[in-house]
Image (spheres, rainbow, N blue to C red):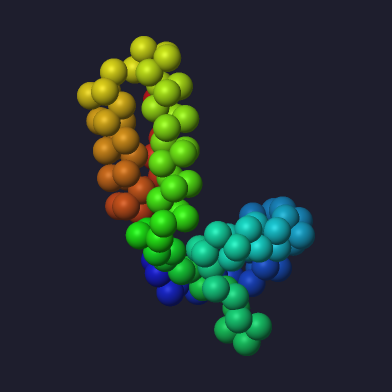
Length: 101
């Protein structure tokens, strides 16, 4: 959720059983993409990036164009594609992890 505090890099690395540098790199990527704010005193917190920004929308359209083109070439119809998108979107927004069938 927006504003939710994350464990420290060390805590998260230990909990997941991975190298702290891997967590540090992931935090840096998420910060650069606008999903995290990092404050030395308060740690990392989740940030909801602005969905209306033009740069993001352009990136979204490019990625969707690629995915839609690939799905179309594989024989996935419009309804099936949109239903799949709706299911995944609903799962993610409900805080669930979508599972591929």
